[in-house]
Length: 291
Image (tube, rainbow, N blue to C red; front, side, top):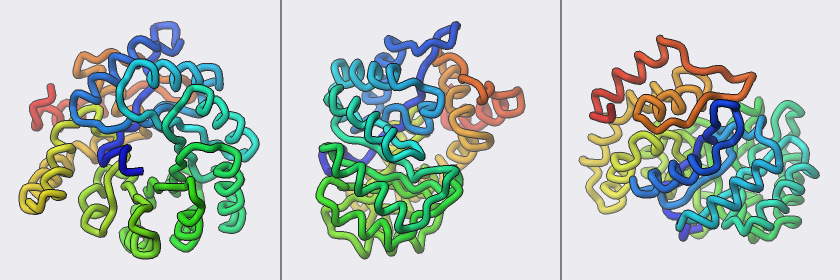
């Protein structure tokens, strides 16, 4: 959906010292991210620690961010159970979210027919614009290009977050879908390659840390200044890698804390960044003038 814009940020979920969701800090973080150029917020996706956030907490996050931040709010609702995904989707509708992000079901590893049936059932039950999310490194299964293309024909499936890391697959999807169907990179390092293949934008983790530079890279490419876009991509690449040196969102939470934006720790089974990860982050963030 074009009103979502090109730079979507997958937000972390801030916690207080007792590991309760810090809703006020979430609002503060969301506003700061938007000031840096983000055009929509993805709330309680993988980066938002969705597996350890309760449905009650998800609803409150969807609602408070929708009420207090003036960009589209895309609610992360996906699980590996179709019924549960639909029930969480109803909370997104109740909170008046602007769309939903639905990850490929993990662990039970449905085949391509199962994936199509899952996303179709959710789309028919939840009358919001939907973005399926293909991330084989997390889910253990790849949604093939042909399945994504078939899903693009369902009216309220309007976009795809594609994090397969396979530029051939990404290109096939873009070529096989209508121009109104928007393909977003789900990997910061693939933002520029995806744009060059005809994609629309990125669902970014790194935009919480370097949003203005990522915005500038996208705007440079869209305006035809491919040289500047390439230079910014090269400059940002070490940071992109540093933010995934261990399991996301461990590094990005550490990075935000290093920048003075206290987002707290992580709920088990995730643990906070060790000294090695923090040193890598400090080095790459210092190179970009972020700390």
